[in-house]
Amino acid sequence: MDLGKRGAIKKINKLLTDKEISCKELTNRYIEEIEKSDLNAYVIMCEDNALKSAEKVDKKISLGEKIGVLEGIPMTLKDNISTTGIETKCCSKILEGYKPIYNATAWELLQNKGAVLLGKTNMDEFAMGSACENSCMGRAKNPHDKSRVTGGSSGGGAAAVSGNLAAYALGSDTGGSIRQPASFCGIVGLKPTYGSVSRYGLIAYASSFDQIGPIAQTAEDAAIIFDAICGHDSKDSTSVKIEGGPSYNEINNSIKGLKIGIPKEYYDGVNEEVKSSIEKAMKVYESLGAKIEYFSLPEVKYSLPVYYILVCAEAASNLARFDGVRYGYRTENYKDINEMMCKTRSEGFGAEVKRRILLGNYVLSSGYYDAYYKKAQDLRKVIANAFNGAFEKFDVFLTPTSPFTAFEAGKEYGSPTEIYLADICTAPVNTVGIPGISVPCGFDSKNLPIGMQILGAKFSEAKLLNVAHQYEIATNYENNKCLETGVRL
Amino acid sequence: MISREEVLNLANLSKLYLDEEEIENIRKEMDSMINFANEINSLDAKCEKLPEINNISNAFREDEIVESYPQEEILKNVDGGREGFFYIKKSN
Picture 1 (cartoon, helix red, strand yellow):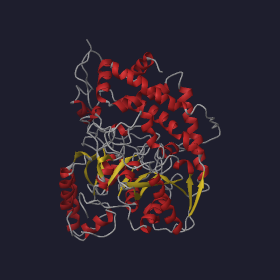
Picture 2: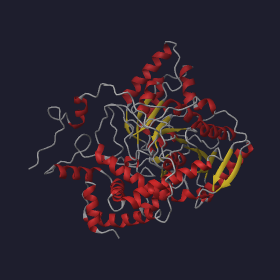
Picture 3: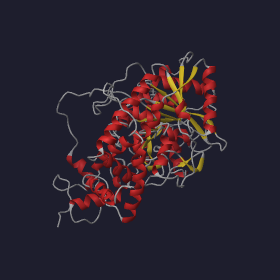
C-alpha cells in the first residue's frame, strides 16, 4: 500500500475511493495495532462507534457517492476534548467516569465530516506537564525510543500519530502541549492563534492560553485538519471568524523573498545538535529564496515566569469546579460538605495539579495580587507588543521547539521550576496569543527527532503551514520519518 | 521560606488537605516557584497604552431561548441525583 511520501490523509482518501481497502477493514487494522501496542498512547477505545462510522463511509462509497477528504479517516482526540457519552477525564482521577453530554465543537465539526474516532489519548493530568508523565493512566512512550518521554502534555496523541496508531490527532496547547510532543515524536503540531478554533468542550486549564490544534504527519495534513476545525462558534465568545480562504490553498505558494527572523534569545542554552539542525533548515530556506536575519527579542526571557504566574492563576479558578458534587470522583466518607470537597480534591488531584492550584491561589491572594498577577498581566502586554513589533519586520520567526530532544522517562530532573524551563521556547506563543507550528527538521546522534518552530503574527496559520510545507517538499520529507510500527500505509 | 501557616491558609483557600510530608515539600517547592515568579519584579511594565492581549471583542449571540440539556442526562454523571437535584449525604 506504499504510496511514497509521508502524509496520511490524502493517502487514505485515495485508498478508500479506489476501493483498495474498505473503511471498516482499515479501522479494524488500526484497532488491532492499538491493542498490540505498548506505547500507552490510548486511554480509552471507541471500537463500536469507530466501526459504525466506518460502515457509514463504506456504504457511501459502495453507492458511488463522493466522500470528503476527512471522511473515513481514523483519528484520535486528547482526553480533555469532550465527546458525548464517551469518558473524558483529562487523565485525572477526579474526573473518573465522567461522560460529557455534549461534544466539543472541534470534534463536532470533524464528526460531521465523517471522521472515525478510534479513542481518546493520554496526556498529563489537566494538561499540566511537558512529558506526559503526570497522567493517572501511566506515561505514554515515545515510539522512537520507548525508554524516553513523548513530551507533553498531548503525549498520547503525538505517540499515536508517530507510531502510526492514528492518521492524525487533535491536541490542546496551553504552553507548548501540541508543539513540544510533536517535536519529540518527529511529527508536525500546530498551535493556532487564540480564537481560531473554538474552545467549547475543551476542559479548561488556562482559558486565555488554551487552544485546540492538529497533530499530524505533515504540514499538508495539518492544513487540511486546521481548515476543518477553525472558525467562529457561537458557543465560544472568544472564537473569531477567520478572514481569507482555506490555508490548504496557500501551502504551495512560493516563499521567495520571505523574511525569516531568528530571535537570538531562543537559542540561549539550546543543545548544539538541535541548534545545528535548525541552522541547516535555515540553509534550506535560503536555497528557496528566503532571507534570514538574526535579531534580538529580549522580552522572551521573562515570558516564562509571566506565563507560569498567569496559567496557575487561571488554573486555580478553573479547577475550583471540581468539587465532587456534579461529576467525576467523590470521596467515600465525609462528615460535612467542606470535608467532602476537600477530601475529593485531595484524593482526586495529582501532585503537579495541586502545586499549580496552590501557586495560583498564592498569586491571586490579597497582598500578592498586585506584585504577581497584575504585574504579570501588564508584562504580558509588553511582551505581546514586542512580538507584534517584530512581525512588522519579519514574516515569520524560526526557533527551536525545545532546547533538547526527548529525555529519559522516570527520572528526577530537578525542582518544578527547573522542569518548567523546558517550556522556554513554546510558552511565549501562548502568552502572546499567536500561532506556532513545530516541524521535524532532523535527528540527533541518538536518532531522536529534532523539531523546529515557525511563528507568525496572529491569524497567519496559512503562512506558517505554507512555510512548513515548502520545507518538507524541499527536503523530500526526509525528517518526517515513518516508523516500522502500527498501520503502515 | 513561606511559612507553614501560609501553606495551610493556601490549602484552605484551595480546598485541599495536605499531610505533614506534603506541607514540607510544598514549602520548598513554593519557595523555588516564588523566586521564579520574582524574576519579573525588577522589570518595568509600562503598558498603559498597549492593547489588551487577545484583542477580540466578545461575539455575542442574539438572546434567544434555545433548548438546554435535559436534567436527567446531566444527572447521569452522579448516579441520577435525587428528584432532579444533585445529591450529597446530609451533614451530621
